[in-house]
Length: 373
Image (cartoon, rainbow, N blue to C red; front, side):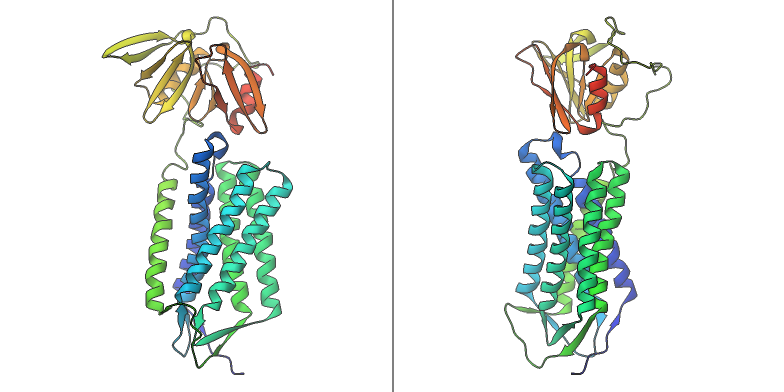
């Protein structure tokens, strides 16, 4: 059995690693803060994250494969190649559903990481099975290295990225995920040889490297577009982590949570039928972000306010309001009861007309401290 001589295009090898990292960042960022969203929105975000991560696995593999040069012409079976992409997306989606719809325990994190690692392996070897006019011959050591790197690094990626959903952890998880995808491919390829096959065994239509390149370019374009979409707001101040207010309005810190019976009154401008009403902050139960504006909820009415949520945070924290979520500011004096929900919570009010307000994981401790719980 005579093995074919192969070489690799360095530029495409580097490009494939970048694709893996970009896909990891995009997918892990898309699934951030899902515990505070409705079930429908969580499912949509998980679907998008699955496409980013699973599509990134597929794109990384075939960008690197486009860089392989052999002394013969070879082709790909389009049906098998497509199946490898869809399988990766489905397996990653299953892992994310496990993480976001089950209690997040050490076992769950490990199972999700192992599942994604198996998805990377399945995508790689099914994708390789689509080669036409040449066949891959694997070595046991190459397979072992691929399995260990896939499962081990993916478990590490999910433990880090989901241990604490901070920007730093997401970046470290991205690095682990990108390394896992790349390591599986290159460890497996290091233990892979190719032999020429005289005939094609077609399962579906045959496509050339040029046709494959068009598909890879399209998938990479979508992944990089999503990366830019998530990246522009990744480090920007959000409602959950706003920039500190100007010194002129910044209040001195106290060592104990305070329920001041007479906090500094702030009058909130609310528009109703062309008339601007000024509502005292003591009358407000909570403020909710609504696009670039906010909704102000009193005991018996919902009002529209022209302030963005960041402006409301800057002004109302001086009146004793606290952040419970990136989209909510609550007046603790109006909270009637609090319910703990695993690693999140809910604030409720005495008025039956007022909806409950979610408390995200990142604000749970602060809210409980202020409520004296």
